[in-house]
Image 1 (spheres, rainbow, N blue to C red):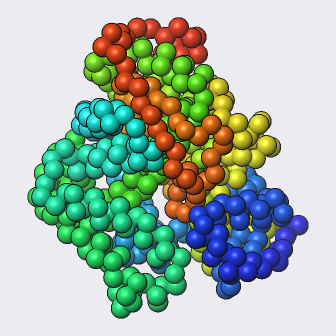
Image 2 (tube, rainbow, N blue to C red; image 1 turned 180 degrees about the horizontal axis):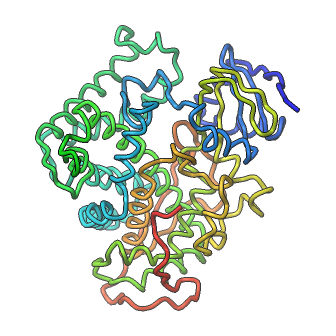
Image 3 (cartoon, helix red, strand yellow; image 1 turned 30 degrees about the vertical axis):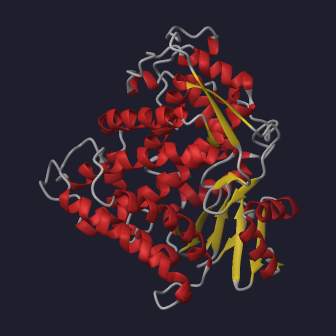
Length: 463
């Protein structure tokens, strides 16, 4: 039986308040509780359907993925025709190459630079003694992401590039919220955005033009010629589009994830102790390898549980390219906007007992995340699942282990912290982070808790 429920009207001023206060997730959650697994509401002329039935989610993301597009006009200027915005044969080409760019062999090539940069950033952070969790996450992320993409060199203009990028991240939220005719260069309120975008383009194109086929960076991989045909994998424009896409996605999502991990571990002393015990299994001088990192079982469980509670991409949008009917019977028309919210699905008691409780034990079984299927989708699902997922796990686990080996930390917030949501989820207010560096006598050893025993079958990039 088909279903075609009406759209509940949301006052546009109320919706703007949700956006300005950074709690759009509350609107989604409110309508989810009110309407159930199919929540429909309308803001002005924009009609939104939020689906959370797992069969519907799998249908849209995997079974009928070709019938649902991802492209949004508001991101065209920023992301161009990269993997995020392209469709059809162009998207399949980008997807195939990006999948190779983040396979285990390539990650092993990126890892030494990422590890060295991470340990340097952690040392500077711990020596500073205190900060906020968000400041710490940004400090630990911006250079790690940059290094993975472009390498360790700091060319002229790198500070301006990072500052422009920081500004663009916040400005992009408003660009996405405005109608396309209000985002052109002609309007005074968009000039700063376009100025920052131009600065980013200049820097990225300079790196492309000066780049070498160094396989220790994503840029090097993209510039290298195909081994079989000998032809370039991408045009200059395509390299730019994919690098900016990966930089935007990786910077925002990874820093948000690290932010929540620092906060949650600081709030849960028992988890912090188990992490410290697990970290003793690794060389104290920081000489551990990517293969060693695959044995950080409890660390991976902590990361997955943080991603369950606070998925960086808390709402995933799809546009129907043709009429369809979902397994639940919902009628979908061409052009309909569907939203899939990992935040709602990850906190659904149908799938997760005590869903609001931080409990890494859920993921100690290496198969737990995979077995959860579409009840656990922090990186999306189906053929459009985030291609940088393996890189993200490598970066976050490297940051976590480096922090544990450098010291311990506490946070000022003991109660659950309110969420600020726009592009990603962050704490709604600053939370102080206090570091206690380890003394010189800390030695590496073996973990004492049976749940921390290394398992060589665990891969930090596996879903």
